Image (cartoon, rainbow over all chains, first blue to last red; front, side, top):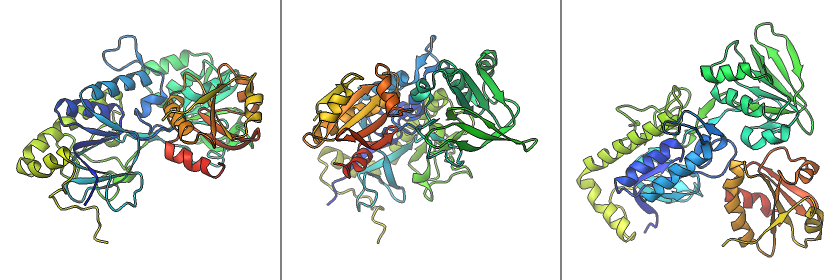
Length: 348
Length: 108
């Protein structure tokens, strides 16, 4: 006898992609379960990366911009209104070897999954990369920060460095210039990757300086950050930049450890999709940053979340007979065992 | 079950934290901090479940910067567990309930 819950559709992740998929599948009366993640300060929390940002100016429909957390709160409530349900937890293990798929929340060693789902939509997004240099971890929270909106306040009147050259880095630098006496952008190339409008704002900002062609070799300081040791990648020269705050925005890595060995990925770990949002396993769909290292925008994530929902809905319809038995019984009384062979037992 | 949370200030901090016969978990937070908002309901739950063995308190760092500086808080949310008025354990950044309880367990 198993006591796991059965769902037609489960969505892992609750950024713009996951919540848009939730809105569409909820409106298709599929009663989606959203495994939304756990609080964190690094980008993989419920609501996703936008929870750590301030003003979102490029999401269509908000002519004066909207705060990231506010946008995500609205998306969440919108999906809830149509019947989406949320679990505030992380998925710790999945079994995609047979349908319905198994999902473990909590103890990944439990013999039975917490949930079984016919269709699975993966929207686990991406997380910020850290530098991986000496003392970075030790000084996290003592001058090294992963969240400019949380911690900028503490660097009022101090010198700050931001590492990176993309939109996130420049947005952080501009935000931090409200607090710091100076903000130095450290970038390994001699030009920025950020959008033109962000670049123009940064170049016009008196407090923002640039250290081009430079990489951080070490974070300096005992109890708190006192500086960074930089290396010029062209000349090879090293120098010390005295700062008390260090914010890292050098790029992202997809949150796909959970699916390693079960779904096809590219070399960087992004999920590979075909014919819309289909992954290498039938019934598993992927949307948002977890499968996109090109566009990575809130609106493209939301768009692909909609695609995944429609793909999942049509796939469920195409199952016809297979869909009749266990789902109806399980959703109704929750008592009967799914008829489809279970995969989660590993035979061990 | 949401438990009672004590609101601290620069003025009341020492008295409240030192005079407590239970360990006190202090949440250094601010209105503009997203991850702080995420853990607020978790702290209420912990306050309820651990009532009798742990007091949960909050200090708004915007209004009480002196205390935040004194304990070298440079990132929020920061949770510091005090026993007999002395800091015992520090948790930086938002975490899930299970992980918070696990980190606190050895001190309770």
